[in-house]
Length: 398
Ligand code: MLT
Image 1 (cartoon, rainbow, N blue to C red):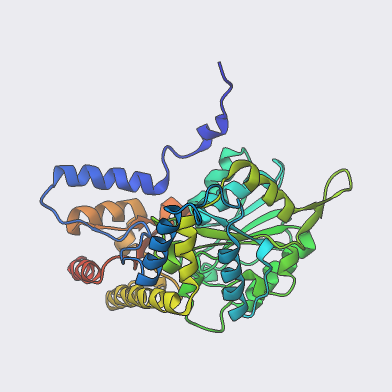
Image 2 (tube, rainbow, N blue to C red):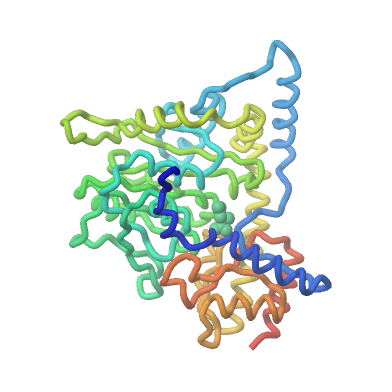
């Protein structure tokens, strides 16, 4: 009999969004005539831009001719896409080399897979509430997690505690689920703390494209010293509507080097390269062709049109909450609106209340950690029509 990874016994019985799905499916089976509006999982609804579609088609066509056919591609991603990302960062004043960029099927996989690079006995620092993947993947590996509280008192932007030592630190900004965004000075404090602790920051920038305030950092690499202590994850899921198409990237600076117990130097860039070439065969050529169109002038303009649409949805949701006198966070520089559950309900009670009374699905804050117990998350990724209708239904409550 195999000895199983019993760390799985320490996980919640199902992944947050799977649990929500089960509840919604059960409800809709019982009430087939009710129109359910889903503002729970952050899944986009607008179609891909036409420039991306054209490049996806070009990718398909290339595979149909012997002279342009592609078999296995580079595990790290095609040069054309890595170079396009180099340019994208340069436009935001950040200099990254192409061989520091690794193309993948998305930030969810990479933020989970990166745990392969770290030993068991690290102090893992994770804010609470947080995107559940960081917590679950560390539990799967049997690691102990130290949580730091993100709450209304610190505007859901916890700062480092110099009395706590950490080896691996997770930061997500703009934050999922709270929508909070760190400014330069705050991120500088985290980088200084990481450097002082010889720690590594795992920086999830999946929502950077929602930042409209030009004073806010979109990349950890805008911060002095970050290349010596940070890895950045990014994704085209929200930037370009790739939640189904799947493409993201991870930046591992070559300056990120730590000393092993035998005194040798270990480069995280080299380790990640070794890991990816062993366990991953890269993203399909077709998808990378489509992804490269995101970084063209026309492609980015189309993505920005879609982003503006979601930003307007966020504004509509925020306006409704304001009118109801409900305290909320996020919604600006973020697709998520995070608010206090009305009438002292806890977040799963409020989930059931919304589903059964007005058939609107959101995400209970408790699914992101104990500090989310009395909070609820709505996403702006629905259609305009559904967002407006959900808010009309919401207005009639309590
Ligand atoms: C969310 O709703 O938190 C995200 O869509 C999940 C994800 O990106 O994996």
